[in-house]
Structure formats: C-alpha cells, structure tokens
Image (cartoon, rainbow, N blue to C red; front, side, top):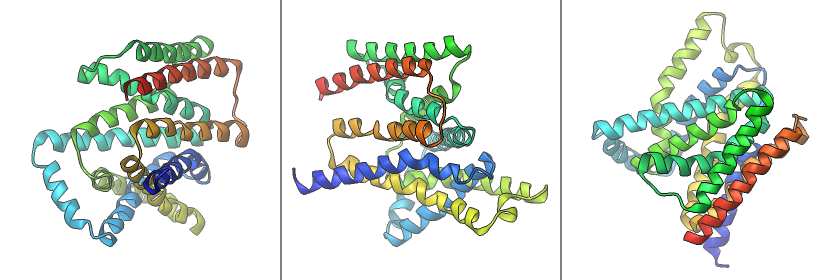
Length: 294
C-alpha cells in the first residue's frame, strides 16, 4: 500500500467520520431554531472558505473560475440552482436532527446513491444494468414498508436523498474546484441569510442577541464543520479509486444511525428493520454492480 493510498484512506475516513458525527454538533444547538442555524451555516461557511482561499493563495483561482461559471446563463443559473438545492438539503437535515429524526436522515443518505443512479437514467439517459435495477427496486420496497406501516411517505429520508442527488447532478454541469463551489454557493445565499437574521433582530431578536458566547461560538463554527469534511473528501477522491470512495460513503450514515439509536434513543422498530434491510440489500446489489463495471 503506497503512501498516497494510505493518505487517501485517512482523508476519506476523516471526512466521513466528521459527516457521521455532524448530528451531535447540531444537537448542541438545540436551543437555536433550525432556520437560524441554516442562515449561520451559509454566512460562516462563506467567511471560513474565504479565509482559506486567501491563506492558501487561491483567490486568483477563485476569481478565474467564478468568471467561467458566470460567463454563460446556463452555468450561472445552474450554480444558483445548486446553492438553492443544497440549502434545502442542509435545512431539512438540521431540522430533522433537532426534531429527533436522525434515523430518518441516515436512511436518506443510504438511499442517496440509488436515487443518483435513478436520476442518471432519467436526466442523463444512462442505462441501468440488472443489478442496479434490483438495487433501486429494493430501496423502493424499503420505502414502501415505511409507507404501509406509517401511512405516509418518509419524507425526510426521501427529501434528503433527492435533494443531494439533484445537487450532484447539477455539479456535473459545473466543473470547478470544491472550494470555489462551496464559496459561490454560500456567497449567493449569504445576503438572504443576513437579511433573515436582520429581520429577526428587528422583530424580537435573533439567537446572537439572546444566547451565550458558547452558543454563538458554535454558530460561528458551522463554517468550519461544513467546509472541513468537504476539503478532506476532495483530497480523498483525488488519491483513491472511485470504488473505494464508493465503499466509504456508507460510513457516515452508519455512524449517524448508531448515534440516533444508541446516543439519543430514537425508535428503531421492526418496520425500520425491514426498511433498512431492503435498502441494505439494494446497496449490496449496487456495490456488486460497481465492482463488476470498474
């Protein structure tokens, strides 16, 4: 095992471990409304990534890539759509964690790769092989089990999977550095986030005015916890084969699932066993398909 491969593994483990324990971070902010956390996440991510670009001497790269993105209406609107899509993904995730639905968020990120495959077929004309078709059907059975038992769609799981898959689809159109991408996405929506916090300040106050320094520090830290795993993941993806990155992506939802069940004592019923069992079976078929084609 060469040095780059080991380093890639370390980067990947770091990224997925951080993503996996992220619910704990949002739980620490349980006293702050989800929309204020989301607004803070955009603002402080823009600040943190801006500082990184400056310290790493990559501001020139950022400016050049930004010019490229906004050189056409298609790529400019695609970047804006990506920013809006990830805002929904982040917002749903933060709200779900605060509402005690970490298990549901875990399910969402388990089925995300299968939704991405489905989106590739629908939007990009990609063909699914037999194993991939079986994988998608297994995921549908898992979701169906939840619908039959609860009488409603597990909308948190489906929304997280769909928004992140659509976000990935949009990012195929815009090929820029990861730091440039997150900087633009957060910059585009930061004015709205600032406006929202200002509106709250004028109508009863926001959390920055009513909470202690510890909470404010956590809100400011949202930028670092957003950007750091993304940077680690970017380095990981450069150093490892895609199939290894594919295997590692299931670390984060597994950690989140364990945190939800054992740390926060969320319900994991027999219906969950059936649903997750179907989804995990689907993922096994999906992994087999990936191994067979790479």
